[in-house]
Amino acid sequence: MTLVQLKYVLQVAEDGSINEAAKNLFISQPSLSNAIKDIEEELQLSLFHRTNKGITVTNEGQAFLGYARAVIEQYALLEERYLDKRNTKISFSISTQHYSFAINAFVKLLKEVDYDTYNFSIEETKTNEIIENVKNMKSEIGILYMNDFNHDVISKILNESNLIFHSLFVAKPHVFMAVNHPLANEKTLTLEQLDEYPYLSYLQGDTNSFYFMEEIQSTYPHKKSIKVSDRGTLFNLMIGLQGYTISTGIIFNELNPEVVSVPLLVDDYIEVGYITHKKSFVTPLAKRYLELLEESCHDSVVKEESR
Image 1 (tube, rainbow, N blue to C red):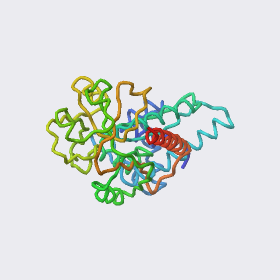
Image 2: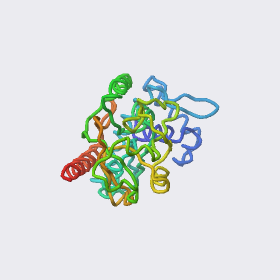
Image 3: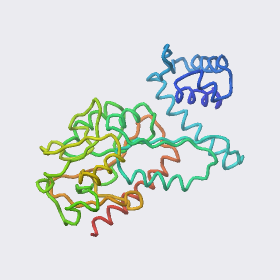
């Protein structure tokens, strides 16, 4: 098994096609097919399901990909430091609920790294997809929350998926709204005060269960409710329709200048954490991202508590 073969496997997994991977690797399709076949025979396992519609990674292949990514990243770091070769793309992937502090830490990481080429991704997505992405090792890290309401259900799913939840911080619920909202200057708010305004929440797809909702108090009978799929739409509806959502209270003004947070008077909490796979290595990039994430969360929570 060689580093070249590992790179081939990762490229096929990313493209989902032998033909596309061969083009991106600048080799012939038969050569790539033979290389994949050779490594599968050496490992005595099947890395890919091959169908007329393309290629998907097997369960055994997903576990192998996690190790392969770690090896390739470590090798790339060695090249950068000792051989001054900058033609190897460093890969790093995160899946997260819609949190500005996750974006903030990602921005800081990109400003720190000194790579000529890299392939980073951060996906703000549904709760179930975050879990699936980390379970299948498509993402190194997933960021989500738990509280008393969803703890048992989410914990059971994480355990069955060989995932571990690491707590980052516990926050008091806040209402997010536009700076020009009629209630934006209130010191605290109740759910009853918000009844006349549209409640905004994120769609959860086929798993649109209350337990998978990003927003706490999801079972509260909101008079007006709008579900959205992305942060941009949610913020536009905050501004255009005086809508609101419920989250941690952490806002970075440089990223979200038109949004404010107001403490919500409910007996509830939001424990935000990150999930990792039990069988995967935490790569140096992931470790640094987590350090920046913890710093970002800690500074923001301290600032919020001092108000």
